[in-house]
Length: 79
Image (cartoon, rainbow, N blue to C red):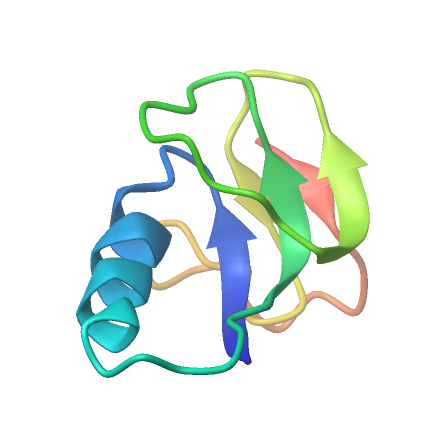
């Protein structure tokens, strides 16, 4: 199980999944707080997304930050 805060371009998930696939796992599943497909550059499947976000704005809150700010917001927000 790969757990990501946000899957945007998909590059990180693709790289980690490729690395793990070399070890012949029975399966790999991806969970993400935010699945942001607008700028996806790699073909990755987020099996367990909590939120789908179709906007192009930067998302902050629940630990997601912008310039070390806004990560302590108790909700998700767009900048």
